Image 1 (cartoon, rainbow, N blue to C red):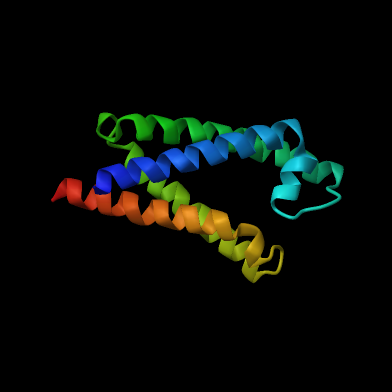
Image 2: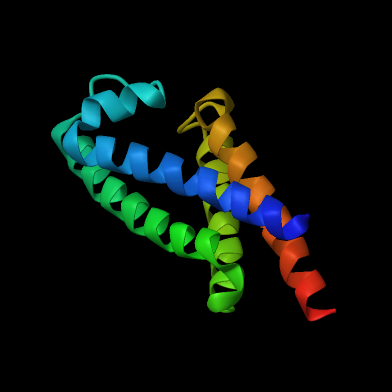
Amino acid sequence: MIRGMARGLAGVNAAYQGIVGLLSMVSPATAGAVYHLTNLAPVSSALTRILGGMMVGNALVLAIFTARPEANPALGPLLAAGALFNVVANVIACVTGELHWAQVAGSLAFQSALVAVVGVFLFRGRS
């Protein structure tokens, strides 16, 4: 059951990051609207495109994990750590007032769930 949940959450995250990442690369203004960001400056648009490329890359790694988690045992801990860093970065951005909690609530929920479920999956796999 935990394996299925880990695969499911990784798959949902892969789809989300792949779609938003491609959108960020193609149209930073449209992607910014997803996060309630308006009137992006040229530098912000460039950074959005770069982040989009990183999101697509991460989506591909998540997709590999989703297909067969046991095939690449190192991916689980790396994905959990990456998701945890994403949560920390979102929290820092909100605490410093750079973003509002509502802007990253979906990301926080999915990334936190991914950390928890993949963590349990990894812990049970070692037991």
